[in-house]
Amino acid sequence: MPVYNEAHTIRRVIEAALSAALPDAVERELIVVDDGSVDETAAIVDGLNEPRLQLLRLEHNRGKGSAIRAGIPLARGDWILIQDGDMEYDPSCYAALVEPLVEGRARVVYGSRFLGRIERMDWPYRLVNRLLVLETNLLYGAGITDEATAYKAFEAQLLKELDLRSRRFEFCPEVTGKLCRRGVRIHEVPVRYLGRTPAQGKKIRWYDAVVAFWVLLRERFRR
Image (cartoon, rainbow, N blue to C red):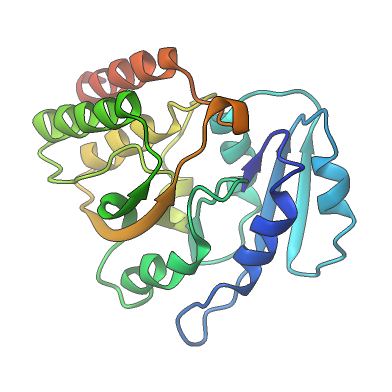
């Protein structure tokens, strides 16, 4: 869980992540990577006294991709699921995301907002998401409906082998491109999404879309 200045939501999302239903016999650990927050985020996490929770604090803000990459080596389980530090994505969807991995039907699962339910996604975000899907399917023949979803679950060893280098929100197109280049099929399940605005703490910006389009293209033709 990469987080940056999420003091208003972090306790609620951690509680939801730790209590969400999972398939039978699946245990969980939660690694929170505080990406140099300057509010009370880290102090709140540190004070929870939860044995299944590990906090990694980065000294400076590096970006979501850097925070995810810092947390991946700490994961001890068979599967890794990415959870943002807000409540845009609903942890009650965990079972649906993890089941295809546990049952051996998939190595990677994306939670598709466009197969599920979307609330409060402004039209510019919706348009960019649709265009990213179009580019992904044209370049890689991926056949997916939501490339930029934050809900991504992986076979842990596969994710650790990808040599990721992203710093900000280009984590999504980079990991998608590298998976597709390896011939890994992306399995999708429907999820619920409740968007928020920049005033409410949303951090992605218009220039991140430009970078995402470029990274998908770069990964397709990288040697």
